[in-house]
Each structure stands twice: as C-alpha cells, then as structure tokens.
Amino acid sequence: MEVSETDTSADEAVPYLDVSGLEFSYGEVKVLYGLEFQLAPQSIGCVMGRNGVGKTTFLRNLVGLENSSAGKIYIDGSDATKLEAHERACNGIGYVPQGRQIFPLLTVEENLLVALEAAGSAEKSIPSSVFETFPVLHQMRKRRGGDLSGGQQQQLAIGRALVTRPNFLVLDEPTEGIQPNVITMIGEVIRKLVDEQGMTILLVEQYVDFVRKYSDSFAVMNRGRFVAQGSVDELDSSTIHKHLSV
Image 1 (cartoon, helix red, strand yellow):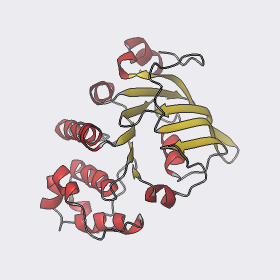
Image 2 (spheres, helix red, strand yellow):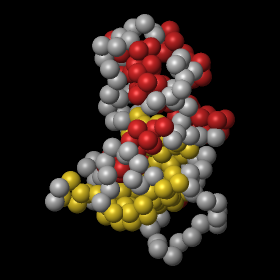
Image 3 (cartoon, helix red, strand yellow):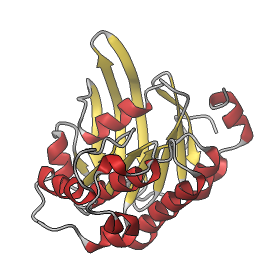
C-alpha cells in the first residue's frame, strides 16, 4: 500500500503516537525527511526497511536520544518534542535499543535495578511481573549479564525496559540474532503486553513473518521517508518486493 496524502482511516480514534513533519540531520547530512506517522493506542506497529534508511534514528528521536530539527511528536496527547530522554522515560516510555546494550559485568538483578534508578522510579524493588514475564531472569538473577546467551540477554533488555511499567514500549530489532524459539516467545510476550496490559508498542523489525503474525500496522522506510504504511493485512507481496527485498 503506497502512502497517500488523501488516504484516511475509518478509525477516527486519537492516535497514541502522532508524529508530524519530523526532520533530523547529523550535521550537514539530512537523515529524516518530514515524517508523518501515527500509531493507535493499545496496538503494535512495526517500522520496516533495508539497512541504513533511518529506522533507528527515527526511534531515537521518539525516545529523546536525538533532537529533531523540525516537526512535532505527540505521545498520549501530550507534546513530547522538547522533552529530554529521562523525562520521556519518567512519562512512561520504555526503550530497548538495538544490540541490547546490557551491562555485562553486572548481574541480571543489578541490570534491572539500575534501570529503576536511572528512570527515577519511585519503586525500589523489581516488579514481580518482570520475572513472571521472563522466568529465566529470576532463575539467573545472580548471574552476570555477559554470561547469558543472546536470547537471554534480549529478555533482560526487554525486562529492563519493563521494570518502570511503561505505557509505551519502543524496541529496535528485538529478534536480531535470536534463535527461533525465543523469537516466538518474544512475539507472544509483546502481544500479551498489548492485549492484557493495554500497552502500546512500536518496533523496528526485519522479519516479515514476525510482523504479519504479531503486528497490527506497518510502515516501510526508505532513505529517511515513509514510502508505504497501513494495517498489517495490507503488507502484500508487491510492497515487500519493492521496498524490502534485497
């Protein structure tokens, strides 16, 4: 489905995430060009695209790790454009970066507690829901993060984002380098977070099958622009061939 300026959705609900005219540059190099993006509340949206087209930069602008040069970002009806990353975290945004970026020398438990402290959470203990979501983290809570497998580290990275009980969870390629059974488990977890806890989730994802199975909507990026968007049912073979095939 190609982007159309006149295309309107039958669903008139106020979007949870509303991005308009978003632009960003690294010095003189422009990376994002007037992005328009919406995500419905309590849904999963996937940003797709080939490597190097601006997907991670888009997420970093949403969570406040980069400052846009133009445009607006509204999250849950509030203008978040000028908020710093820690302010967005305090306002209910959780972020799981690409490559996990856990602390390898800290234990699983310490990694989770650091996230609580960094977000300025009033809670001082790890919510039991994190261990219920990822039982392996409880089993290995005294082991160092660097000693975990790739799949276990990804669970730790997601669990670290969940300790602050976010309303909006942003994940950058959560299935990258993960074995198939853990990919399935992660998909089921994020679907459950939406369906049972009312969370809104946005992720960058390369696997089309994963997107079709777990997502509600998609947006394809190319050279810093969204070139196709729609419900996941509209992610057809022609869109995949044109914008995603290598």
